[in-house]
Image 1: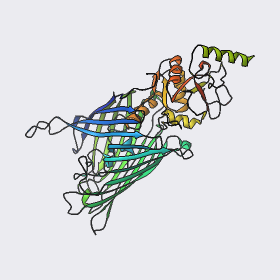
Image 2: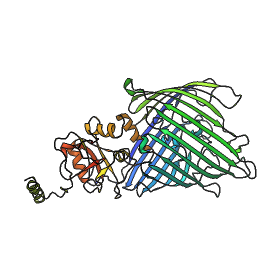
Image 3: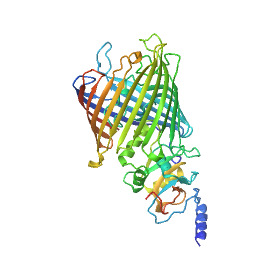
Image 4: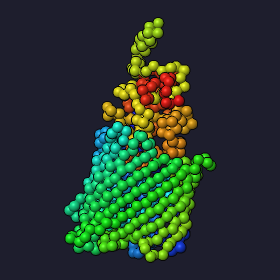
Length: 338
Length: 164
């Protein structure tokens, strides 16, 4: 290290990758072995108070080589690109493309499969999913206040909201005249080290081809997390209200509960886990007309082969709403960071 | 007698052109095996609660009250100083601490993770030169030119000091 500390810029690159295997009774998604995402994370401090972060992903395409011209083998995506100015712990301002901070999982694990206990994200916040806006393009103000040991954190954002394909953010601009806004507040109290809880509110006007009118979207969410691994516990809820003209508003709901425990035996390398998740789409919710319902359980175990690589084995069983056939399958993942 | 001795040391240091502050080092029991929390002499803080120190070590608190960024200097794994920082302060295993910092940087919550120092001498040298730096060293090794913080109101060697 130089005498004055860091030199600028100081680019660092971190990567994540995973290889997956799945075998289900009725196919939903890839079967057999599949490449997961290859993710590169670039970080560069530009000065003591200005930093740049980016996350790039490369995802194998199932239609590779088809069409004219032939589809490429991989989708390259700028998942996050953030320039942040830090005044103090209490005030940080940033601009760019984020994972929308209205869901704990979305901002705790991003595309780092190795970071999360399970193989897959909860479906309410899966990549490419529609229930919650995964990406947010705009500006964020954030900070943390000690608050007598409560350690309150806040984030307030203004951005483009969802694109016309509502699983995507408005990367190239806002598609309507109404910006999305969000507020997220959470606490990490000293008196219960490991506990985090909070809630958020998101407001947007979305425009989709299947609706003549714009749709007002209001999302409320909450989370409670115990981050220690003995045990680990994550619970999240989100409610999405859609309003179209004078029609009766709809409320769609989703939640999941996940528990895990790092076994003290065997050098603390094994961590069994269980997750229950539920998605309920309201009848008449035209924005979520293609979002499937879900009642599913996941049971599995994670084995940390080294400090930087892990294997995960899972069994899942689920239905897609009342009266639908039950599906189930086995899953495996090897994931790592480098 | 002791006061005269200190004056001689200060005078000699000044004569030798040693610009680093000498008088900010707080009294530490010379033979103490406690782990001292040592900061750059310009850090205008004398005491940290153990919970505040934990927030710094986990990157949840990144700035000193003066606005200078906290630069964490940690010994490599296996060193006793790091063990106290990770196990006693953060209540984590080395694997958990490492994963925490990979995730912290990946979440874009901070641009820098703790910097590794490979010896007590290197730790003390760097902490005396980098504004806002904080490190952990054996209390008996603390020399001049740095500042030792009280933790929960106690200095190394005092009864009830938490970092042992």
